[in-house]
Length: 236
Length: 236
DNA sequence: TGGGTTATGTACGCTAGCGTGCCGACGCTT
DNA sequence: AAGCGTCGGCACGCTAGCGTACATAACCCA
Image (cartoon, rainbow over all chains, first blue to last red; front, side):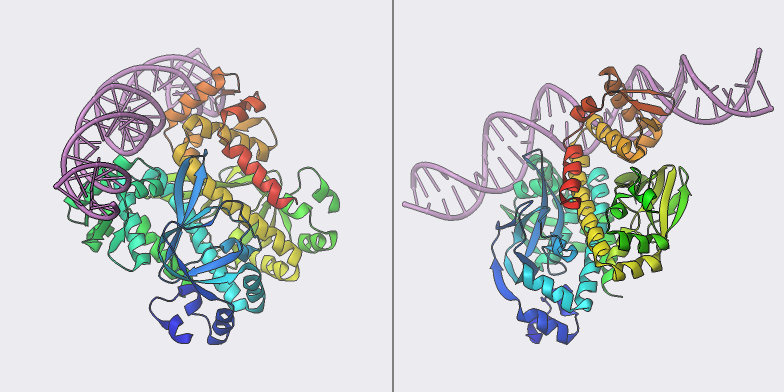
């Protein structure tokens, strides 16, 4: 158990807990495989399980006006799905879609809430995560409003690369368009521009990050701001 | 004390607590007057006081790229300022600006945290509020991205009217432009359109809501969605 | 009463991104 | 090897909103 959690691909919310609490928590967890495209939660669903991704990652998406979609948050090994249960609310606010296949720890809602009560250290760490997520959500709102597609795409690819732990990403322009809330043709234009600058390469549903520092340069500052906020709050 | 809290203009997060908890909480509160334009918190400030508006209200604003601003949340008598302390994080994520002058209950950060520990009922209610605020923030992100200025302006006026408790609002187009993250001239166009439909009237910094149902019609659905969410979670 | 300040109306050219639709190229399947 | 579905490139006209700037009008104070 301990070995898994100390592995580079363990979930970061759990990995840094004191060993006693971690073992207790893990005893209630099972490891599940998530497949690309799985819908884990729909808005207003009752949350049955909480997920802690290991090498998978999940997109949280707002559905508005029946057919518009926009990704507003992402959870990979640095985060979790089902965070409203930390607040004691068992309702899902957003559409949760598996965006990167892989494994995750899963715990039932009732066991999760019991563990929260048992372990103030866990509770406090998850509260801090919630603060970070909320803050990032607010910053994202402004990012999505003010920044251009090309910079937003660059930021999105960086965030995805971090969570996928690979510089090869399986994504179509169509899918990216839904995430960013823009036209598919708009993504194509932005991708062409990034490719022309030698930052990425792509071919039929596979994007490769070629120049990560360059991509950070091309992205808006929101990417580094997000990273800095997480680091500041989660690793004091 | 009780009379104040049962008055129609008491803070709704506190008013519905059991009497014992409410009295204990109120003992640590003082009533303060907030003036239009006061900056109560800057991003990364340490939170010294938590505010529960009575007839005042506060805008929470993201500052990005040094000079762009965008309001992402509002707290009036239905809400509070300093909610990250509910999570045990004493850092302010956003710029908090007094947008409607009036009074508020104020409690020090340390007393607030003590009261949270003492009163699970209070803690739970504030957790629910945090869920609502987070959910509204996510919906707002999509609203700001997809909806047009005119509909967003209508929504914003309705939200402000609810919190001001008056159909007379003291606002310039300039100020509205900052809130909505658009040009002043864009606000003028939208205001002209709403006025032409007989929904509002205005004159040099004062806007009057003339036809509230019509304004709800003109606003995007986000307004009624927000109200419904608050009602569903906060008054079961 | 007059001069400055503030709020609003309006106009100009410009750009990002929209909705749509079509075409070609790739690659999987049979 | 042929056929079909998927993916990406591109082009069309269009719109919302931008940045900027200037003009009018109301109000405030001296």
